[in-house]
Length: 173
Image (cartoon, rainbow, N blue to C red; front, side, top):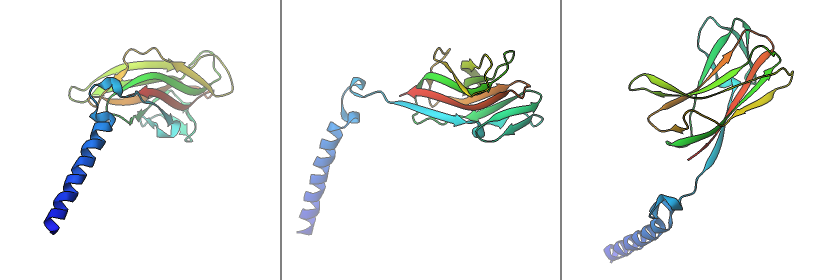
């Protein structure tokens, strides 16, 4: 009697699993039925590390600046899905120097051949004492898959009137 109950329970679970699978998006035929998901990731200044030990800089978490000599800083990107399409990159910076700019670059690397591709760049401009957003949505490459290792690269010239605050990416999958 116990064996029959177990078999009946197992059959009932199998039916429930089949019905649930058929009604889920993964169970439907065709990718057209799946909805595109849009996500935003913000990477603060505190996530960036200096690319050279000789850079004289200050990183308070919410702002990164160089004290003497320019420098570059990098941060790895960890995205929510294996395959994504980058829609836009936003640089948050204080740029009170009309002659120099803070620049943010998005790269994707291919570890098996030690190559990289610059996907896009956005730079600050003008002169203002307040933090501002600088946006770009025209990119050289948009796709990042599990085959790539994406990262951000910030260049800060020698100037106390330039501060990097954060990078924001909007992407879909």
